[in-house]
Image (cartoon, rainbow, N blue to C red; front, side, top):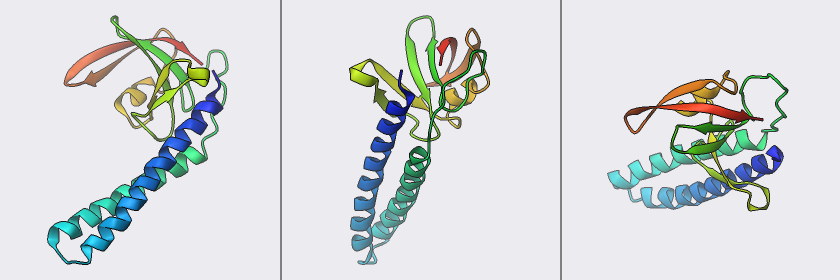
Length: 150
């Protein structure tokens, strides 16, 4: 699968998130001029969200995923398939955008973005095909077997 296609798609999604946050921040700053405490708090929260969105977009803009070499452990840029006994997921380990859903080239399935800072991303980093990782999901410990990585 073309990782650069996925990285470009993620970058576009994060840019759209940034643009939305920027517009909301502008509106919130106008409202905050009223001096109302709630409006001031909303403006501060909007500014924080804008800064986070900008940092995520910048991280994705510089992201150039490389192909994994045979025997290499999972790291940033990896595509990973995991199964928990009932279902499987295809994941893309990226520097930002945790929780985003991406579409493979030509509509070839869906992938979920995980980051090294997310619970599942932390568990995957440094692992290899055949390893099992444990992650707390909705208060329950879930085991995922790594069945494929590229």
